[in-house]
Amino acid sequence: MEDYRMKFYSNNCPRCKVLKKIMDERGMKYTLISDVDIIYDVAEKANINSMPFAEIDGEMLSTTELQEYINK
Image 1: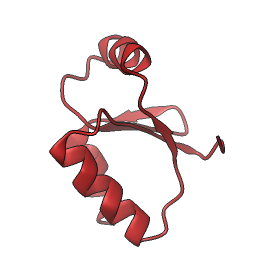
Image 2: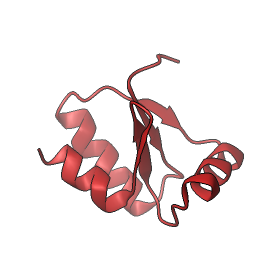
Image 3: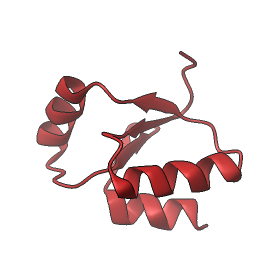
């Protein structure tokens, strides 16, 4: 697994699939985290309650923030 500056946390939900497809189409590099135990632990600590979410350079992005980041 490559270690890119973005960690993309996804449980393969419909929104996860859409954002993953957009990121792939734009050639964005990320490390995919799909282990549910890790996802729940990170989400709880970061007070995130929707999927997907991401961590970029140590900053946690909610689904909405991730969408905004992708659309920049």
